Image 1 (cartoon, rainbow, N blue to C red):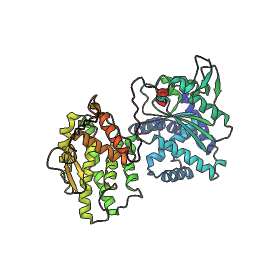
Image 2 (image 1 turned 90 degrees about the horizontal axis):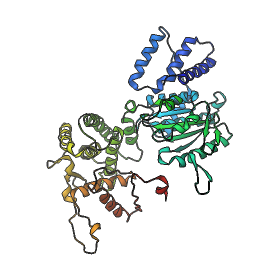
Image 3 (image 1 turned 90 degrees about the vertical axis):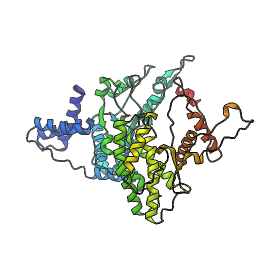
Image 4 (image 1 turned 135 degrees about the vertical axis):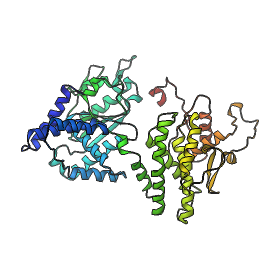
Length: 496
């Protein structure tokens, strides 16, 4: 991101800093503007290098740490109100997002899934609304209520996004984005209006937004209509990467890179483990937390370095699967008594953790890696005396039998096949170990209201297992609906 736009954003920030602090030396003001306008877009490792370059450019100039005072405190309070963890890296990114938004009306939050992009803009929106309600808007003009409108541009066609003519009647129909912009322009209040585009950037839809993102602030539609955006409207993009974005798009937007490795997976575990609905003793809670901290990180590194995943999956998603399976077993029907003797309870909880650990971290591996993962897990968990793995078969061949308080083989709960001549041939289901274990996992996750994704090659039985389980759940509180997707399925067809 080099060129006049980058220079302009530095000058705008330097100008606002100079007006706020007219008595400060200009080299300090410029240095802080250079730092604050560029730091948000760097990876965690590159920030150290960038700060070293700045020190070489401005030798002997020290930048005093800026005290954000009530703004920082409000961000922390809003984070706690959402029952999230107040980590320094998250608060820093929220402040960087706010400062970037002050110099650019188009901002991209870049980073992998689970890094906290959505939480970042939601916390900032809550904080600005709360600051305005507290009367701080009179001192700082940008402390105003925020209204957000979220859409996924990649989920609809270009015509549905921007608008299109009906080819039979030649009647113009506004698209989703055009409607959202029109509503925001017609709103004459001073509130912030954020149009959040939560979806991957590609050269098709983002290039048509170039006039919106540069200083023209003009949305040009195919019917020759042009809508001028006012200063209260901001375009926010949530994207995983900018692999296919052109330099024209990248240079027009402010960038805030949210590094998932800096946050890590522990905050989401801390949020889950402090759930008020979990009635466990403090020592039990600490014991479970230590199990996660001891075994999850080494296994994640081993999987990433030595094994092959069937589908790319971020670390946070794997850890989340572990504790969701743990929650469904421990707090679901037939779960252990959490007020019982800690010695016996901890041994059972450790064994349950081991089973969830296997499926959460190893459930997405290619079949060729199962033996390697099996030997690694057995070796890794062998130093914990409370964990009692099954002596027969591999780690995938057992389920958690809560009535016996031990692991047992899937064969024990695999139903026997009974032929019914009334059932059509294509609806006949022969139970196997695979149908039993994948149905069991699906059942445990659906009990918590969590979505489930089966991956695998063609013809291995994904649809059959899912349909059978959904038909079983239809007798409870679920109504199954089956939708088949192909490469040609579009958004209008899906809605029909």
